[in-house]
Length: 410
Image 1 (cartoon, rainbow, N blue to C red):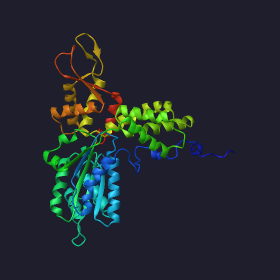
Image 2 (cartoon, one colour):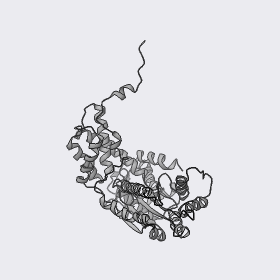
Image 3 (cartoon, rainbow, N blue to C red):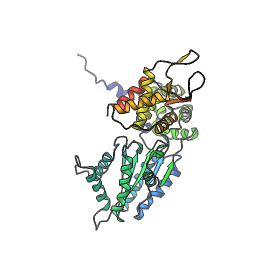
Image 4 (cartoon, rainbow, N blue to C red):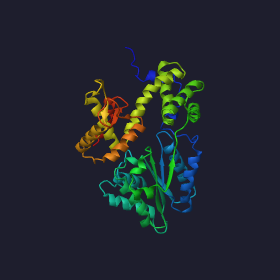
């Protein structure tokens, strides 16, 4: 009887062009971040006040996906905490992804649990957890307080953000001079701060920083750096690196897009057994990466924008083709007013607050900025003056994605 072979034996023995695949994933952060020295220096300058026993100003960082906001902030925080620990300086930090912790209570609970890992805060009120955080910053009388830096990534995801920011900034009055709490807010949404309460905006945005997209030349250098770390020598053609950088620069200037293109291209080369990444593998990877990017983009949108996009997808699937005066019809073209009506109906069904028509128009502008929809003013062949909206991607996929990402969670 033939000996059974483990089904993973073949995969384990398969030749690969990767030296370390993890180093070409979007989640890996190199110790040397190219073309971001300016921002590393500025953030370090702000946070260095903690090393002298002072509260640093709050900081708000925004820019498109893949511009290095999170990587730079985490690198600076890591080095700050390492230096403070080595010098026995009472500085602590905490990082929160607000997509996973999207309310004041969840964020405070996550922070306090990290500071007190041996204690269980399940079931305690938000007020109790908040006081526990202030107590930690205040410290004991002889030991003195701590200067705590909180990084709130994807801060636009927080439902009760104004209440959270107001509480944390006012908490410094109760802590006194021995310690402090300061905030770094990170958002992909360039227009996000315009929706903040004036008090929140003045307290959070003491310092602002905008991370610009990378250009093709910068992306090429970034990919060369990653390629040298992640792939075996002479397995990635230079033209493939330049092509991946050019595609990413043209699409968004997103370093994650460029990195994902080479990652998927490498996987395709492995499956084909070609032993090399060429332009051909990059072009094949482009289709796959575009779908992944749409998923990531939609999943990081604030809930209200997801509801608006969901309304557009639903109407795109159910509405009959739009008739024109000329007798022609066009599929998937929607009136702005009917999208807003559908949004109100869906938001009400899921017991979500309905935003005003003014904010709805802002959401439409932002969705178009992200390339998820297209808009145009109605012209010849359409009665009246309105904005026409058309989805930029497959309506069935967008609808299914948002149902999994948002509606099922509610």
